[in-house]
Figure (spheres, rainbow, N blue to C red):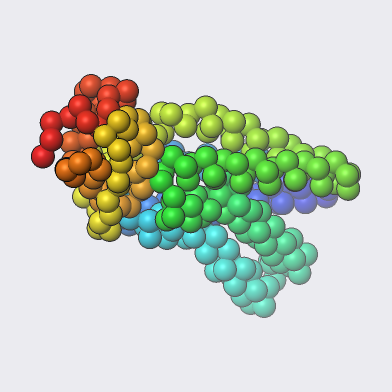
Length: 260
């Protein structure tokens, strides 16, 4: 009975830690007026499914990602306070609570999508690469690290639950990869009405370039002007190019659009 009671307490600790972590993401998302779709509590972690309204500044997502891990600081501090001010919170409870907090914190910072570390890596890639290429780079980075993780677990014969966690992450990564085209189309649709990006930049393309190729050069937080290099240069707004992309098709060449 004592063993069962101890296990039950440990499970409650884990659920509490994971819940507070995810609520950190939710609280910051609400502050930036993001939509909260759902919160999932899994056997070895959690996931807050959030939806930005259009294109949002990178700093907002960075705050939202980091606000989950930040919750561990006050939870650890609270454990020390309870240990020294009450007779209910024993040293064993304190040590277990601290170890679970640190484990979940470090695990979430592993740069594998969809963990917090993976989301930060995606933000970093998005700052320097076109959105579609940033998605691919994030996926490849996650796949490489997951493969290394599987190898380490097998060679060192570590706990079975680590293999289960890595398997779950691999499944999530595969499902996310299958949704890549859907995510990219949603991104392009959001860019049509982008009201938050402020950095101006030009995309220089040849007259024979298709809209598909142009779309793959678009960066998340940039306001692009499309410059067609010909005998005489002419330009298009990104909105006009994306409107043509959805109305005429991605195979259309940039030179076939009405010139400005």
